Image (cartoon, rainbow, N blue to C red; front, side, top):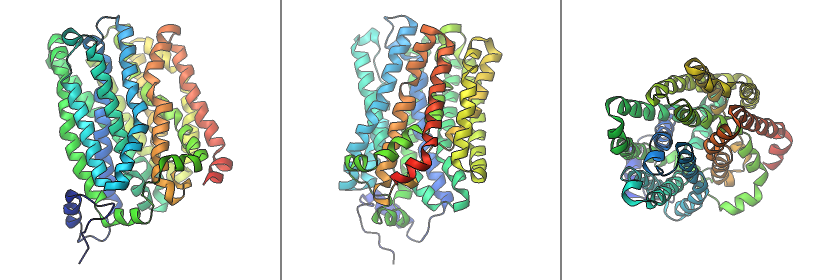
Length: 444
């Protein structure tokens, strides 16, 4: 009979029930892990993009109507960045909960914090109702979202990579990344529908709140999908063997700092591109061209589909030539793209389409292999915590302030400056990859 008693990796009643469901199975297939990872990441990115789209279409008018549209959007992007600042603090707090009470407790609390803070945003009073307090409440809710995202790190991508066949590591590495374009597609569909059926007044009054309500339901589904995997004997075994056990964050940072720095800078090309084809273009087109946002959201949806296909292609290519080669070549292509593509946003509808579709194709190739590039460099006792620190650092450095910086540069100096910003990300990736053999292996 399979033991279903509690353990540090299996502590809540919900986890014990899930483990009973899996008691007849002595091995969980990588395909099942992949589904759980995709569901979890899609829910996180859906939440992420609902807020990102609202940062352009809603908050400048609802929360910051007392300044001009550009300044209001810059304020909105500054609040947007708070989540990335908060993620490391969330990781520290929730890893302590993980060590004391188990991963199921940690994951449940993190996802409910994420859903609760998102619901708080959906009920947010505007500036016309409570004045500047509206911005304060929005900032607090956004910070709580970041704390929750930092705490929602569950090690499932690591579990997936550890269970992946050796000749398909590139394919399995890209699976968690599919959550980004899939979450974006769901968010785009919701906002496009609402913009199409509601008047502008109704959308700004109550319609924009609906996608935030949807987030809570999706998070509940994601919670059960992830807990089912966390409760499996395989996950508990990896926990007990320290493959997926949290270690003290500061001790990990002190010992593994070189690998962490390498891992944080290696994906910067893809992380900078991430926001420069998802969030920034919508703000630029809305502010500079005064176009119908629903039309541009449809262009972005086509680009997201291209991004899904490109991520899938990155897995196939990486298994033939190696993940490092895919990242290096894609960084070079992103550098070339940065020299001319941002100016296309000022060239009308065809230019916008070329910018978005080409950008998503390059993003998919790079982003598809940017996750966990250095995770195998960490010794087992530091792998779980080291991977979390790398992920938080890369998002903060490469993506957290990207929409704010890009919009500021574009309004102050022109679209060419956005290209220079993107080029700097590509240069950081190439530099990190150049140090990979001599520096990364030495740190492992």
